[in-house]
Image 1: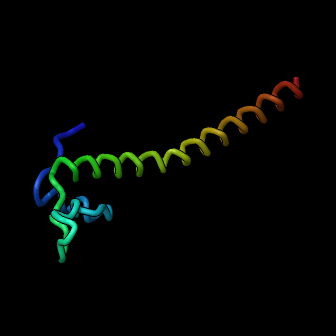
Image 2: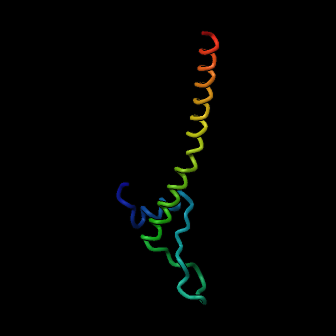
Length: 83
């Protein structure tokens, strides 16, 4: 894993992926927007979001693998049947 992003680059990458960059409100009676989350919290959110994106693409690998298995089985049946 490479160096973790910080500061503005971190904020921009989070916005690209639709990650909330706001932290918890300072007080219960606070009005207005919440403060920005810490770099540590944003890095954690970013790592989790990127991991989720990678894992969501694994279904494609599973489908390709199953199709290859079925093709291999069909070829094996044909070879056995023709001998």
